[in-house]
Length: 217
Image (cartoon, rainbow, N blue to C red; front, side):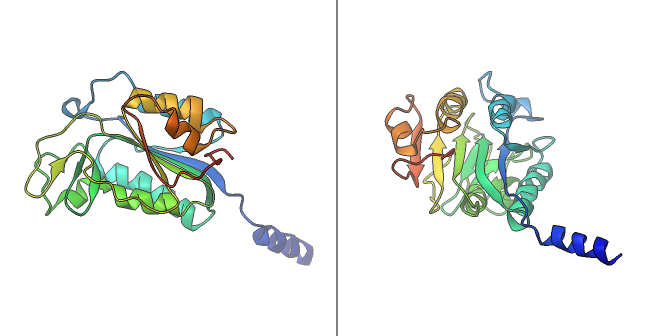
């Protein structure tokens, strides 16, 4: 018994290997009125990430509850076993106020500054989680369809994005972001600053873009 207890104690003391993780807030279960006019789906992001060894976290549908559950799962990993490389994909629609921006759920119709916090996932919270990764972190934002059915104090679109230190941001159309992911971010030796200079039209790189370093370095 003492030997078993000793071995168990050693195993518990071993550090847990931090994983490469991707959170994808995509189009699974998204209502038609919020879908962007594109053939790109969450799967187009998930496949290359999974092939590159990333653990994929996705909500079952586009309800605010399931979106938050998926984000909470990532937060739990960050707080417990840790996360090495982190990719967060946020497909639109999005909205903003003077203080924050949100990735909207199916239930966002009429959302105002009074209740938008419970109908979407704050981009600021996603940025905070990205900054908590042990390795490199990037937030891909595809705003998608412009959703106008909003209430007081909330406007469609990202607005002026509040950047978090240590996080790279890539913003653009879904198809272009899939290309950036496959042909740039997931390739060894591709640095953020080099990708920013050769980005497809309509794609913008912002935030922490260290010279000579990329997601997979």
